[in-house]
Amino acid sequence: RVKERGKAHYQFYRTEMNSVFTNVVTLETHLRKAIDKSELSLYYQPQVNTATGEVKNFEALLRWKDREFGDISPSNFIPLAEDTGLIISIGYWVIENACRQIKTWNALGYNDIHVAINISPKQFQHPNLVQFIQSMIKKYTIQASSLGIEITESAMNDTKETIPILRKVKELGISISVDDFGTGYSSLNYIKRFPIDILKIDQSFIRDILVDEKDAAITSTIIHLGKSLGLEVVAEGVENLKQVEFLSKAQCYKIQGFYYSKPLPADEIEQQFLAKNMLKQ
Ligand code: C2E
Ligand code: MG
Ligand code: MG
Ligand code: MG
Image 1 (cartoon, helix red, strand yellow):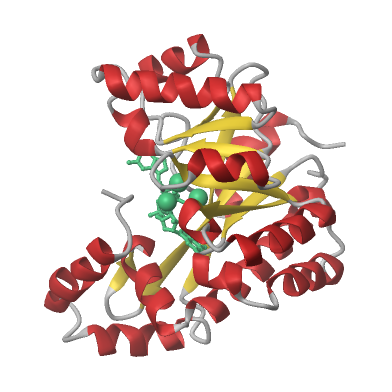
Image 2 (cartoon, protein in one colour; image 1 turned 45 degrees about the vertical axis):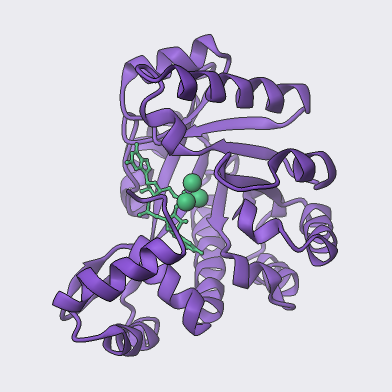
């Protein structure tokens, strides 16, 4: 499972990864060099608006291909990056490269697009985050409204720091999504007070939506809640048509998941979505 973070993942890379890397230190050493060796890349997963058929929203997802060990999943190296502080430089790399990609797509005539990047809790609390994002928007001369951030509920627990950061992000015109919504602790309290735009229903609720009445009820309730509060609601981890139909009936029309597409390199996104979708202006 992609979802379970923190301790569970730490445990995972300490045990499973040991069969590949002799120890966590080896993995860390490799990760430290990954940026310089150009082993990181961003893939993009589309979100389909099932009401209009449009595809303008994409989530940037980090990929690491180590020369020796091959593809390593973010679920494995992000927790390590968090623990070691490497997430700060990796996070900057992600922000810059997402901005550069937006510029590239703009230059090809695709202006009405939106790319969301994942910001980990540690990076979110880092003092230079907003300034850095702002400087990248300037450097690549892109519109802030083509950029979004995704943060989990765990990044939002320190409310004294959190609200001013979120306000600054929002003032720039960048959208704010709560990722993996429903898996944290203080959901109702903070969605009332925090300036967020989008709820992303965690894929653990979507997975069994058709067979588990509780998951179905929770999903419908989140959709209703979002709607009532004027928030957009996105379902992630949607893998089949029956799930899409359930979500349409429940009035959720923003869908992300393998049913439409797995995350893809930028050039494949162009061919398969941007060109066909005729977002050129
Ligand atoms: P996330 O942000 O919740 O991203 C969604 C994850 O679900 C992605 O896994 C995506 O490939 C996967 N997914 C999408 N559709 C489906 C589906 O239909 N079925 C299933 N089973 N899975 C689906 P991925 O790319 O392995 O990333 C895992 C997590 O790693 C992300 O979860 C996010 O928390 C973190 N991550 C990825 N890229 C970054 C990054 O650039 N920065 C930070 N801080 N974290 C990242
Ligand atoms: Mg996640
Ligand atoms: Mg995400
Ligand atoms: Mg998620």
